[in-house]
Amino acid sequence: MTRISLELLRKRAEHNNKELFTLEEVSLHQEGIERIEFLDTACKQLKILYLQNNIIGKIENVGRLKSLQYLNLALNNIVVIENVEGLESLVRLDLTVNFIQDVRSVQTLKGLEHFRELYLTGNPCTSIEHYRDYVIATLPQLETLDGQAILRSERIRAQQRYESICKEIDEQLDDLVAPAKYVPHEGPKIEEIDPTTDLDKAQAEFWQEEMEHTPEARYRMQKQQEAFERAEELKKNPPKPVKERKLYRADGTPLNINEGDWEFVLEGQDIYSKDLVLDFTCYKHLDTSQIDLDVQPTHVTIKIKNKVFQLVLPEPVHPDGGKAQRSQITGHLVVTMPKVAKPVPRPSAKKQKDPLEEATTKVEKLEVTGPAGVDYTRIVRDAALKRAAKRDIVPQKPLPRDNDPDFVDDDSVPPLL
Image 1 (cartoon, rainbow, N blue to C red):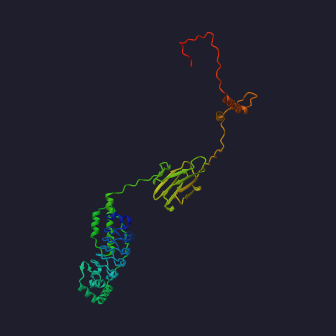
Image 2: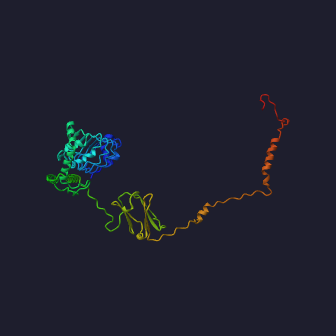
C-alpha cells in the first residue's frame, strides 16, 4: 500500500523546488494510493490536485484546502460524495468511473459558491431516471455536468419539476438492491506470486477472468497487478543469497562478531578487578525490549534487530551473578559480569626505597671553616672603611732627585714625556 508521505510529495514537487508550503499543483495519479492524508497539513496552498487512477475509497482530509479549485478523483473506489463542504474555492470536481449510486449525495456540494463543473460519468447513479435534472436543480450554481453545458431553459424545467423528481429518485433508490457496504482501506489479501512461474501466462489468465464491477473487484485487480510487478522485479533482480551466520567454530569455540559496527569498551581486564564490565553503545531511542542479551561463561551475545554482537571474554565469568543496566541519558547498555578467579590484592601505595637509588641521589656537602679569631661581623664594616680612606687620600707630587753620576745629557735625544 502506497501512502501519501513527505518523501512522495517532495518527489512530485520538483517543479516547485521541492517546497510544499507554497505548492499549488501536485499529481499523485497511478500510485496505488488507498487513502487521502497529510495533504491538508503539508500543502495548504494547493489549487490543483490529481488523484485519479488509484484505489481511494473515501473523500477525506481535504476540508482545510481552502484554495483548492480542481480535484480529480476519477477511476477510484468512491461510493459517496462527502467531506467537501470545506472546499470554499472548489470550481471543478471529477468523479468519473467511480461507484457512486446515491445521486442525492450531490447535496454536499450545494453550499460551494464557486462550484461550476461536475463529472459523474461512469457511476451507477447516472443510470437513474431524471439524474441530470435532479443534479441541475439541486446545484443552481453548476454550469457544466458531465462535460455538457447546462442551458437556462433546462435549468428552469428541472426546477419546476424538482419536487416530483425528488420523489421519483427516492422511489428508484428504495427499489434498488443496496450493494454490500464497502469498507475503504480493507480488502482481500493477495498471495505473493512465485517469480519462477510463467508470469505472462498467469497475467493473461487473470485478466481474462470475469469480475463484477465493484470496489472490491477493483481493489483486487490493483493488488494483483502490484503482485505481478513485484514478481517481475524479483525475476529480473533476484535477491542475493543470505550468507550463513556462524557464531561458533567447528570445535564449539565462540567467534567475535560485530554486525552492527557498534562501539564498546570492556573494562576490568586486569588481575586486580573482580568484575568484567562491558559498556555497549546501542541506539539511544531503541526500546529495551528489542535487545536480546545472553551471557555465557566464555562469551557474551547481544542481538538487536536481527543483528548480532558477540564478544569472547578474556577469562571465565559467572553468568548468573552479573547484572545489566541501561542508561536513560545515553542509552548505553552496561553489563557487569563477576569473574570466576578471585582478584589479586593491589600493592600498597607506599613506595619502598631502593638502596642503590638512594646512594646515587645522596648529595654530600663540604663544611668550610675559617681561621680562629676572625670576627666575621666586622668584614663588611672594615671593607667599607678602607674604601672611604682611599677616597680621602690626596695625591702628592713626586719629589725631585739628583741625577745619576753616569748620566750623560745628550741634546740629540728628545726628552721623555
